[in-house]
Image (cartoon, rainbow, N blue to C red; front, top):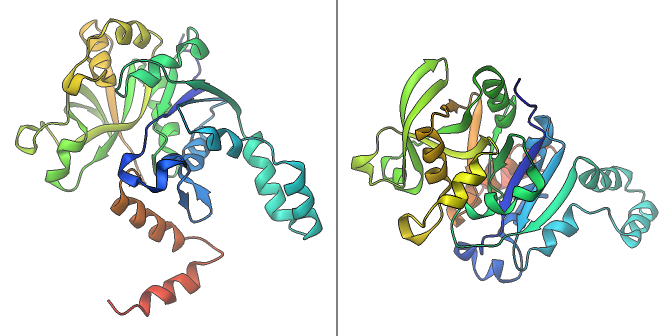
Length: 293
């Protein structure tokens, strides 16, 4: 019997070098998208998908993430109550109540497999989700919920599939060689990490969110550093695949991918979501229309 997916790991230990000097003292995951930090969108997706425990893997200078998901302090509560800002107070209190938050420090060599391995003590013997802390997909139903439905039907490993529109961007992602199963679900024959565009097997990036079995930890421990001297999660997934574990990609329906890990895509995200924000969308739209571009 397949176990329920109750836990999500969110790696958030990166230095955010593409946003320096802004990220010298502030985590890149805390960059604001109108009035919420990037990582809150990721956490809300997990919770809306049925996740109960959110494990955030942090590093140096990441304390602001813990503070954000902590209960509001007494001074802030008094200030909001005195100003009659009950809606803001409710929203602020809710942040700490939506999930059980667990924080663990990343240890080990560089690479995106390391934070996953660092979370092993909090997972125990059950499957879990992984979502990166500096990007998200906005979709209805949530991306992770769609993935969990695929896992409940097929088991194995499930990875979100993102269609890459511009060929030159393929070298930024792990690209899948796919075999169709049904609908938006495909079985992954192989994943090529950051291929040159002319060598990419498809335009589907297996990226952003994963459902993994606990056996992934053994595979990660046994890995030797790969491309760039890093520990890659995809290498551990390929090792389990070679052992017979099926790996599926699900192309997310009704989804929009927001890569907030670089300046240009971050600014695009801010503008798009500001145009949807009920408090400012009208005035902001008029502001954009009146710009002399």
